[in-house]
Amino acid sequence: MHNGTLLAAVDLGSNSFRLEIGRFEHGHIQRMEYLKETVRLGNGLDEEFNLTPEAMQRGWDCLARFGERLAGFKRAQVRAVATQTLREARNRDVFLARGGEILGYPIDVVSGPEEARLIYQGVARLLPQSDERRLVVDIGGRSTEFILGQQFTPRAVASFRVGSVAWSTRYFAAGQFTPQAFGAAEIAAKAVLDEAIGTFRPETWDIAYGSSGTAGAVGDVLAAAGGPAGVITAEGLDWLQERLLRSQHADRVRLEGLKEDRRAVIGGGISVLRAVFDLLEIRQMHVAQGALRQGALYDLLDREQPETDLRTTTVNGLMQRFSVDAAQAERVARVAAALYLQAAPRGSERAARKLEWAARLHEVGGIISHSDYHRHGAYILEHTDAAGFAVSELHRLGALVLGQRGKVRKLETALINEPVFSLQLLSLRMAVALCHARRDPDVEGLTLRSTGARFTVSTRTGWAASYPQSAYLLREEVAAWQKTPWELELNVG
Image (cartoon, rainbow, N blue to C red; front, side, top):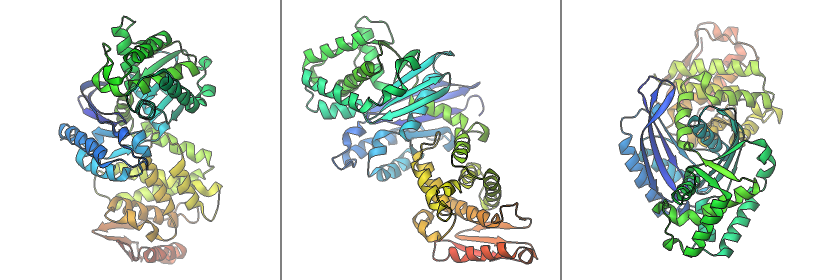
């Protein structure tokens, strides 16, 4: 990453969409521009947990404006991250497909723990260096994240389905502020957050930080009322709730420092924040400047090189946890990547890295079943919390692991108009076949080429006679690709 490079992060939150553009200079990212729009995507989930057409259109309109600003940015310079609303939405694929086209960049839906990790990175990067044990609380529109960490390292993360938009919709739907509504909202929030007490108890941290919209909005109001800047106290929360009760209705709230876009969700946000203070015995919380979008920016830097990419570390951890044969995993990964890069266009290093991760995890399900390890491995990857990975990335790794053996047609939907995935899959299947004896295969003179919808595999003269089992497995591979959108031609010498 060269000094002066511009980077951008798009945060598709449940209440607001945000765009942050920064300039990389000597290891740090300096903010250049920040845009925020109140989209209230979380309000657009119907009873079936589908986004309404109106909510999707609001989101797409915002992404179109962001996309215009990002015109000219390279793909590696932009990270778009979606959170709880799009984790929940049953029709999220419709929104994401159109949204990615409009924005001009893919949108990653991240898991709750991954969202928490990115939040902590954003908070930590904008705090002074310190050995203090930090508790970071981020109350978003439909989820709340808790993180314990020191310096740049999160030690424990958790995500809960409670947030300012969801709680405002549920307990203050008509905008009415009553003691009964606040009491019910706070009790319900505590019921959801109760399991956080064991991990995030007061003796595990030295100082508490609040990030994102709710903490920032409350901090602004309390500071405007004469409190210390950037500090939220339990007494301040009591005072603020009393002021809301006096107003009786969200439309009548008049508080200096409260932005208009926060008025409709302040009731739910206050209820959740009060529940957090009470459960974790917080007396004082500092408002953090960093948030998810800054974490996503710094994550772009880490992904630049394999050795700094957190996903590589996560893959290593999964291999250890599920007792993967490391030597075989590395062998298959090495062969698969070499085959892939022979046929891939220039600039395919990132796709090759993802193929290597899938190859290193191809036997992750072996601890459960020897015969169906590919199916169990795919299930593990679909349902694990893997730091650094977006949900879509884990889905793609799972699909490769599932498709490493057996019929190729089971992945036919993914193969249609997906040349990168198809080449990744063929490379992995060939590598698994060539490494069947669990030793380094002789691949000298073996080539893989891609032309249109055809893959061509060729070997040197005499290779088939020397390795009859490998040649047989490659011939079987030709049959496996029949009746798919792709043709495999084999020239075995």
